Image 1 (cartoon, rainbow, N blue to C red):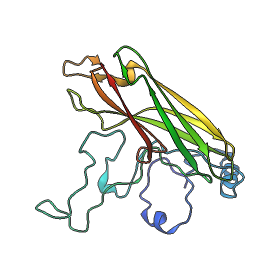
Image 2: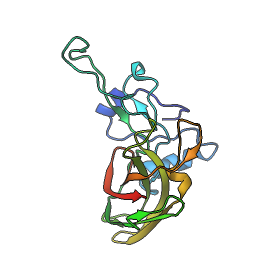
Image 3: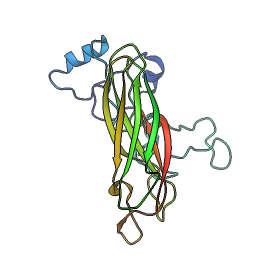
Amino acid sequence: MINGQPLTINWANQNIPAILEAWFPGHTGGKAIAESLFGDYNPGGKLSMTFPKSIGQIEYNFPFKPGSHADQPSEGPNGAGKTSVNGALYPFGFGLSYTTFQYSNLTISPKEQASEANIVITIDIANIGNVKGDEVVQLYLKDMLSSVITYDTQLRGFERVSLMPGEKKVVKFTLEPEHLSLLDADMNWTVEPGQFEVRIGSSSEDIRLKGTFIIK
């Protein structure tokens, strides 16, 4: 596909064995597409937007506020029967590879921290497939309880890692106070005390590891 925005490609998703999103690749795009299709290059890109299943879901985006993407019930006075269209076709951060990656050993240090200090997060990422590949490790953060409504989760870090078959690397993220801040009812940026959940994954919906820390 050569396009500049998300498309509703449900039929292709169900019937075509492989889809390559090329966006607008420029004058060398033909060579890049051919190398990807024939396996000379292992793609590692991730979507920077959400692909909906239907134009009726628009605006379907990331990040989102709690409840804004809630599924429509199939029964009841507001039910949709069997016509309801729920969920993303491809979520934010989605992307496939010719190899497989394994996530493990999430560490969060410290588990309790002051609002003006940093939190350090590390994970192990391993290529357990048979070919060299790149994985974009994504860190999402959820504020478990806040004084105002915040996004369900927010992307707070990502790292592209190149791995040979069987190779393992440590990926490190540092959460700074600005990554935890919100705009409160008085329109001031502040870091509120409470619990935060760290989510590490291959996309916004493919979360492999979870952990928590507390801001005092």
